[in-house]
Length: 123
Image 1 (cartoon, rainbow, N blue to C red):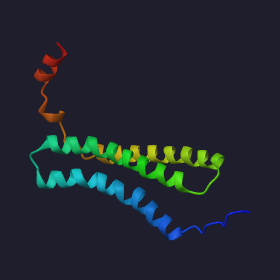
Image 2 (image 1 turned 90 degrees about the vertical axis):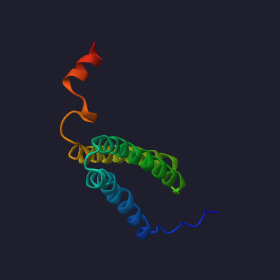
Image 3 (image 1 turned 60 degrees about the vertical axis):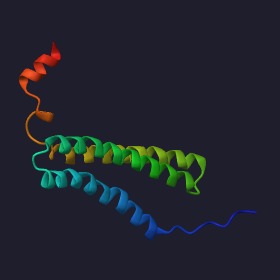
Image 4 (image 1 turned 45 degrees about the horizontal axis):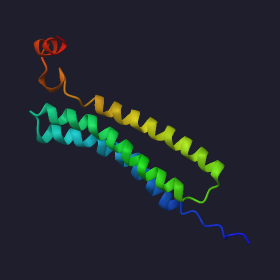
C-alpha cells in the first residue's frame, strides 16, 4: 500500500525563500549600517559586525536548510541533488553577503593599525 502524497504548501515555501534568501542579506548588510549611524566613531564595531555577520548568516542558513531538506519527502537520490544545489546556493549567498559588507567597511587600516604598528608586528 502506497502512502498518500502530501500536498506542497507553495505559499509557505515562497515565504521561506523570501525570508532566508531575501531579507537575511538585508539584515546582514543593515546591522553594520546601523552601527555606523549609531556609533560613528567606532570603526572596530563596524568591522567586527561586517566580518562576523555573513558567516553567522551562512551557518544559520546551513542549519535551517539541512533540517528542511531532511524533512521533505523526496527519495535518497533526489535529496542528494537537493543538498548539492542547496550548498551551491548558500555559497553564492555568502559571496553576495560578503560583497555587500565590503562596501560598508570603514576606509583606512582596520582597527586603527598604522604602518609602524604593522611593521612592528612583522619583526
